[in-house]
Image (cartoon, rainbow, N blue to C red; front, side, top):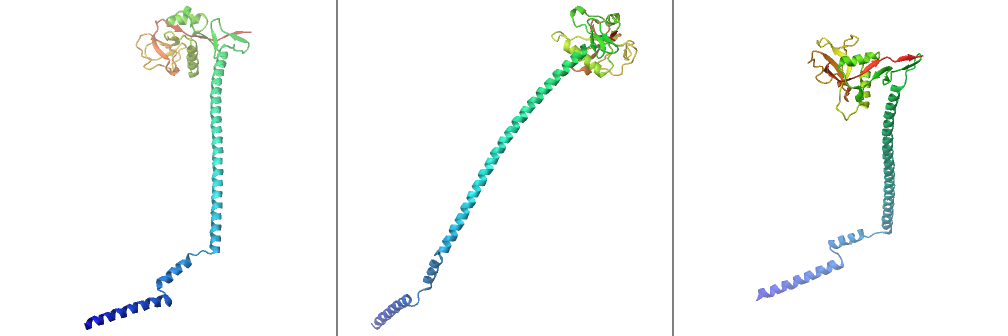
Length: 272
């Protein structure tokens, strides 16, 4: 029984002690946690100066954003303008390219016309010079090309006899320019719908020893032979010109007795 009484007394005294401590904290000494909460409330409180600073910063950001937008719009306008200028430049380039191509075509046409007229103009030197009927004046010389079927075909020797009848001989082609002009003239006047045939020229290998000579006895220096020509297969070899597109490969080795067309050459006669 005594233990029980003592135990109750101790419990009451402890409860009173707890109550007194709480009252003491509330009235005189607040706990440390309450001080920290007050400090936080004081720290988050904005003054008028703070709101003005924030407003100023916001205005600055808005001005910066506005300036950036204006700059971007200006750059876009410049880009559009540059694209427009570039398009016009491309159009002009295309236009000038077409003009250049047209000029080149005109130049080529005029050059051919001049060459054609020059071939038919009489040579004026110490009086007028002319060619026999049916002959043409080209490079200050008269030439005969038997294009028509009525002219027929001849052996190399018969063709030479024909030329000599008119005071000339078979053509001697001793330069690249002469070879080029002769082949071009043939190509511009032959009938391309018919089989391509050769024309006798004044060159032959009389001894069949591989030494080709012109009619005046001059040894050939530069020839314009086709591939695998001359082949020197025959005992009597004469040269014929084939009007091929590549004038560097226009000659062939033919038996002199073959019937072919020919080209005559002679100096024009003077008329004072």
